[in-house]
Length: 358
Picture 1 (cartoon, rainbow, N blue to C red):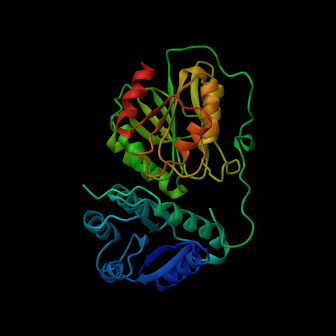
Picture 2 (cartoon, rainbow, N blue to C red; picture 1 turned 30 degrees about the horizontal axis):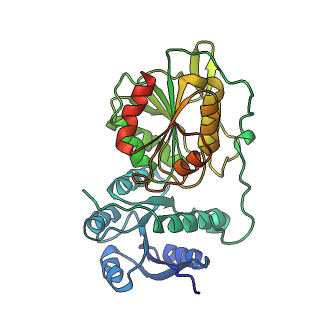
């Protein structure tokens, strides 16, 4: 029996990028690029003709920008879309808007010297297009191309596991949160429900380096909490949320009576830097039963082992349910590992965190 391929339409004003994406996607036996379009007006007709399963959509487009096109698409014909973004702060702002409108995920365009970054880019775009095909899409209101796959390291590569977690109960709580695909909007849904008196939060979202600072600014504007990109040595205090910088691991350390943020340039863990497992292990070891762990929507299993370590250390743990997740990879794996106390829909998670902290 012939396996039905995932049909992809590539939309980008650059002929070079259209060809590059077509070659990458067609290299995978499960994918088939059925067409391409240089602008949204051409794309609109090709969607009707070709009936693709997934779109890749450039953020900056002639005749109609990608977000305007996406809003119309999600209103009239919701379907999985992976945004192709420039690795700049302006590109980040538009990409976050696209994710808010309904895009499933995004990839950043390779640098000008594509030959050096083609392998990583190929793995990422193939994986995300496949994932998008099975994602939950709402209306608007890991396969390599070639060569060697990077080893999947555990949190041991960054932070040694200790056998004696902290068992002293204190009144100060720390909330540790991890997310990936669909996480930028899910994190926002949690933060907008958190008061200025909420416990300090440390957050790892899988995100590129140029995107984490604009993401923190967007979250700060949406929440009564003060949200910032974490800095090394920064004290964790109530009413503040600290987001891991793209490209660096965030972990928590106890310094006397205080908790502080630490940053690491250690190797990627579960192929991610920042990694949720690194954050959760540090919280298990430094905060112990005074912590609350949360995993929101995301592809893969990063955070599942770390959440089990947190639970074993006495922390309370919560994950987003399958129905409200864009991808129930990370939360589902945490459940499989036995590290979860509560499985809740997204709109109930903030209230549960405050209840557990209280």
